[in-house]
Image (cartoon, rainbow, N blue to C red):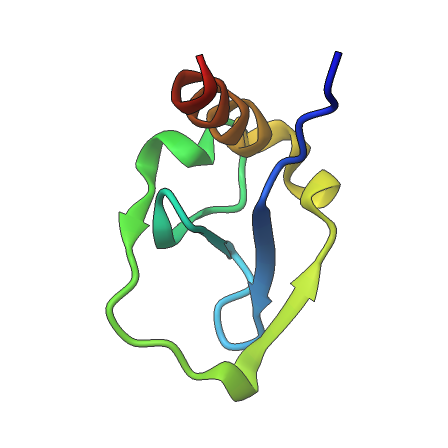
Length: 79
């Protein structure tokens, strides 16, 4: 069985500590609250200042449903 990699990145916006920024090729750039189930409240990001973004591990947003959302998107495209 081939191992499927999750192609997503997670960032912390230094100006908005209560939000995560995520990116994937399938979803694009989104901002969502850094709280349980925050992914359900995601919104597309229109403007980003790369100087204020710091990439972090996807595991840091474990309770927001981010990882599950990217996995379901990934598997729906590979099925």
